[in-house]
Length: 363
Image 1: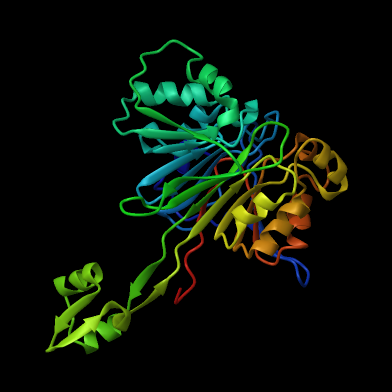
Image 2: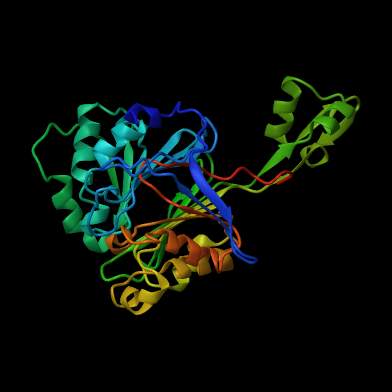
């Protein structure tokens, strides 16, 4: 398949397998592979273009495989672009996925193990090469400042990027307030891994949805609607109309990113009521002891977090290479997550594009 097919204008694709599990199990989806060496198969695309979507650049843990690149995830959120954990090869995967350096506004690194950060030097050099004009924030655990510095200056290049470091300290930190011109609240919480590690949570501020029938009944049209939204009240037809009379609450959308960690309270807090949770599932349930020893989770534990948090869509990723082959392969991981989580489960493939679930009608 031509790599350009995965650009932001890619058409609707239904080229993935789906089935409904047994009673009590969630719905599982995975991309249908193309069998091409070095490729993860056909990209999963729900809808032609989404203003809020996850572009999966890589899904392997520790070592890349023939089908899986090192980690890398690009979250497109309206006019913002957040790059999470750029592992080795991320810059090339961005080309295949149709993600440009200028689309990146923030970089969020969970920890400084190589499979989550070795692509950073190339990405930063490319952003300087392309003369990215806007400031770019990069967030990472404060305890790994020296390692980040070595990555930041791993090669010689003309560095013209306005890169602003945000080091995450303590058990939790607010990196963006979601107030005023800020498009969302971005927070981080410390996780339980073998090195300093954080997870991230993005929350859109709650708003209000205008109700056309009520506006029409009160004769409010055109620019008056905007004035009512801005001021909260409007004089119309000899009476005062409040925003509450012609609108209803609209909860903000939520996104959570939980990588290398044991099961811990912070992982549950990050996932709480998330519309989309991207979660590591390095091991199958049978390797639970191994997962705990190395600071990781099983697919079943990822499902447990999603179930307890009321998550709508669970995206599994960061797979051990041991599940690359075999009769079940990595599909068993999706089955194990779905056994405890009643929502939708996606087994991520490289170059998938997964839209953030649309708001429920009336929400």
